[in-house]
Image 1 (cartoon, rainbow, N blue to C red):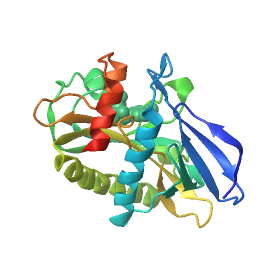
Image 2 (tube, helix red, strand yellow; image 1 turned 60 degrees about the vertical axis):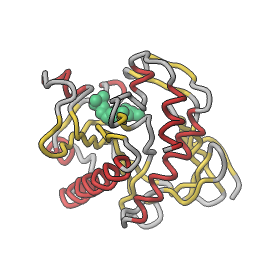
Image 3 (cartoon, rainbow, N blue to C red; image 1 turned 60 degrees about the horizontal axis):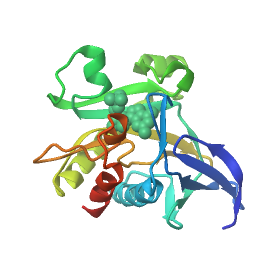
Amino acid sequence: MKKGKKLYEGKAKIIYTTTDKNLVIQYFKDDATAFNNLKKSKIEGKGVLNNRISEHILNNINQIGIKTHLIKRLNMREQLIELCEIFPVEFIVRNIATGSLTKRLGIADGAVLKKPLIEFSYKNDDLGDPVVSKEHILEFGWVDNPETLDAIIYKCFRINDFMQGMFRGVNIKLVDFKLEFGRSTIDRKILLADEISPDTCRLWDVSSEKKLDKDRFRKDLGNIIQAYQEVARR
Ligand code: 5GP
């Protein structure tokens, strides 16, 4: 599969065309951004770790019957993936209150939620990815119909159950995470897309509550790469 031209460049990844119009290459950069691009840095080796961690998690999710865009990891920084039309919605699942939830609603940081909570935000950098409701998503056609949206929400909770168990097994609490979905350009099926990594999840060590995720960058806690390595190792 030959790599072609750059199709899209995001904050942490680049998408390249291939000789097959329905397959693309996802390249993981070392760039880190936070607070809607206000904070930027390069973290040497982050892309390599996220490529590995995301490959591992998406392969496992495939095995529980949820289709993902991942075909295979190609090398240290690249994956071959199915091209998707991404729904412009971030699906955020939370098990413990922290981050924007506590800021927005004044909830105590670290409060364990009675059951997993799902939130949606509209993917739009100019607007700062605002939180939206199901009704917004359907009214503005960001997801085409209520059945598709319900199917995606169901997958989000299944993925949460699976990932909570997986991380618990290596003494990590899955605090919250963000998912993105799209429609395959091959058969229009819904696929889990993007990546799942310490860039997109909050992960706390079970006993020490040490943060093992991108909050180390957001909050200037240091030892970012060591934390990502720890997640990959476990
Ligand atoms: P919060 O809304 O508290 O900032 O984020 C909730 C969860 O979703 C965190 O695990 C965070 O990493 C993830 N998340 C939310 N928005 C984004 C985003 O735009 N990019 C990335 N990489 N993760 C996000």
